[in-house]
Amino acid sequence: MRILPEDTSVLDALGDREAEILGRAVDWCAVNSGSRNLEGLERQRALLEAVLTRLPGEVENRPLNPSPEVGADGVVREQPHPAALLLTVRPEAPVQVVLTGHYDTVYPEGSPFQTVRTREDGALWGPGIADMKGGISVMLAALEAFEAHPAKARVGYRVLLSPDEEIGSTGSAPLLAELGALGHVGLTYEPAMGDGALASGRKGSGNFHLVVKGKSAHAGRDFASGRNAVAGAAQVAAALHALNGEREGVTVNVASIAGGSPLNVVPDTAVVRFNVRVPDQDAAAWIDREIDRVATAAMFEGLSVHRHGGFTRPAKPFDAGQQALFEAVKQAGALLGQTVLWRPSGGVCEGNNLYAAGLPNVDTLGVIGGDIHSETEYAWPQSFVQRARLSAVLLMKLASGEIDAPGLKALRAQS
Ligand SMILES: [Zn+2]
Image (cartoon, protein in one colour):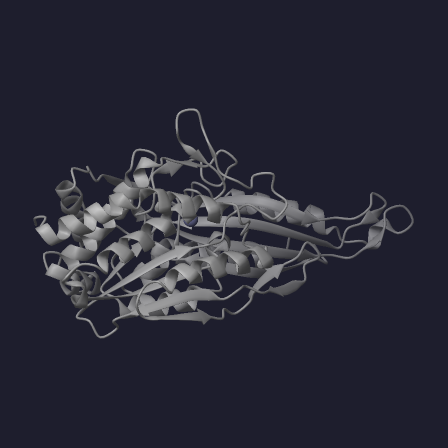
């Protein structure tokens, strides 16, 4: 692999646009787009659509199915999502790339964390600057620059910008599966780790809600006829927690018990919420059976347990196809003087979904930063152009065939 003169002009153009690449990400962070803030998400979507239309191809607003949410009262309600944005460029080209990002954040409408400031050490500190409005700006910058490359006709791409990644992508999961099947290689713009490392293998993840139903009664006059759902939920929680350590790599995090009643009433409803991480499909099947066992075990007479939720993202092992793709990214980075490292991550993202759909992918091509999902989230401004250049080189080397996209896809199919 080497850098040609036409590649150099693409890379130089990115350097010239640094202020714009940073500035638009900072502006986007000032729009609150918490996963449940529909109005804010709509505003963010419109801003992104305006940038997408600067690229060739067709922009679509793809409506998403609502996702079920179990309330503290045990009732399941449908939660709507705004549309996902999908840009399709040159779908007939011999190499097809799928690029994904999410425009929701973890910060709700009422969060005090709403704008980007510059820290004393120069880092940008703000909601979504790393995860992943900075990453979206990097992705779009790389594509904009690539459109000036003479070999662009060899690469077509689909860009998906989704509104529900931070709550498990249940709405956009069908779209991720559809796109995963259509591409040769996937590029997703989650932030890299603090030292710039990419995430290699990822576990699978599931979110579950067990609704415990008992019987309400007056705690003084009629205590014996009550069936205490909170006490049952506590036993369910303890049984779930006891699964930790039972199987290599499987963790169960009991996150909350919701529900309850006034002090003089036996509570009839409680909801146990928990997250499960698994290293592979066999482990997922094992924990699935264990959850069923816990849910059907009689905690005590008169209680029932209903199970909701499930696995949202399958595991993403670092198999031969993934390793070959990461080696290619490493070589591309070396052309720019960038050292590309990787290690496994405990987190999950759209890259898990794309992998499950048969698409080899790198999912941490966004900016370098840290403290994501907290009010100290930050990103290093110098990483924006660096990472846009890395993606631009990947696109140019996919176009030249030096990175063999169909070969990588075939390797994934064998694993
Ligand atoms: Zn993210």
